[in-house]
Image 1 (spheres, protein in one colour):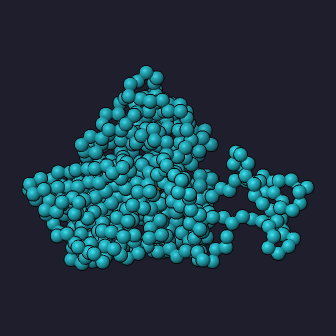
Image 2 (image 1 turned 90 degrees about the horizontal axis):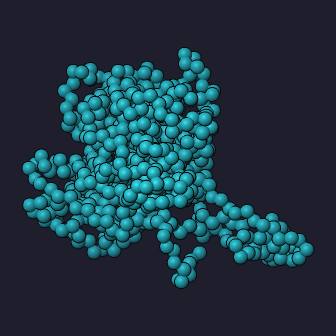
Image 3 (image 1 turned 60 degrees about the horizontal axis):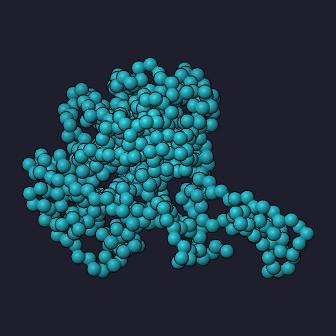
Length: 585
Ligand code: SF4
């Protein structure tokens, strides 16, 4: 199907033309009485309702047709994104499933008892915070929301532990920088055009690459997402400290989108030995909200000590850090963490650098260059790219820059490949991208499809202003009052992508920022790395000389392989089961 040249699509940021395989064939319910003759015809009335009208029998009434709805399963299972077995696993991931597990879980002490653990993403906390703040006299911080969610999980549902996933994200960012350094070293000797590296935390985007542009898979970082690292921390690391096998723990995550259910269902995230997944059940922020409503839990009610920054969770005496924040973006700060590592490295070398940024068309596509202030040479070039429309531009960009056949622009580039000289002195136009933070949702994870939608009239900030370090400026002027300045009235809207509502969630996200990474975070992450990589034959943790460079250090081959198994994954091309030419219209 093509659109008329006179027809323009506007105000869309997430639109992909459906493929032939996405069109559902019309079901003909009335048999034709002669070969080749149409038995019914479809009429459309002035308001867009569809009617099936018998072509021959004028006495039979027209029948109003139901609007077709495409569910997650239709979409994911259409041409092989996932197998039907995996689609069953996805349907099993719901809040009803959590309730069913909890009510059937034998009491602690029974051989069949599994320890229920819940981990919630920071974007989900921001969504809940924005939702509660919109009806409160005072903004409710993410820390307070985390405490209330923890109280709900423990008191109303019987969970043993409830964490947030920001510490897992911290590990993901460290590991991703390590991978980026390896990638840089490898490609500088192999092929200078094999850039950029693309971020990997968004399953929506990974699914798209696996299905439509497998040529791009080698460019995607193999570092696991925070959800999957959290899965391993809970089932493997905490499990050992609790003296439990992975199968004896039931792990639920709360995420901003449905795509995370698909991610948790991937075969790579299944423990064959213990026959268990790293994350047993993923529910969205909206589903958690539903769960609270069903249990009669009012999230707007304070719980004791909710603003205290003390660490609520310890694992066998080891504090488990919470709300570890990273300057940059609310979708994970993948790009900014690399920029920050490179800046520190350059400064340690005695160089001074300057970060420039440029928004191209919308804030969903922004380019960053790190320049040497003395030579003016570009040390690093990266971009933040959100939403499928921008994502398709990135595919073209990668094709052009890399010269990879099969990607748009790749063949042209391969023929006329003129590699600019590596290193200092190149202009930002010459320099190919080093890294792109890619996210499938316009505005990123705060706008995930599973987040809470606005439900009442409210006032919101006009703009979230970022300071030079990437943090939003003072957010104290966000209130629900009627007389505040800098606010605008927003009518209730259940639409995905409501820009004013996204700004509010974004602002909530940054209200609980921590200043820097505190020593507790550093100590726990080194302990985790030690336990994962050097668990058996090495000295006890207390006797090992672990310093702050430990994460970047190359370990021996056994330790490296354990580390890689824990933190890295792989992707595969998805073969479509639909042969385009065989589809009948
Ligand atoms: Fe999920 Fe959207 Fe975030 Fe991707 S960008 S991880 S699809 S919420």
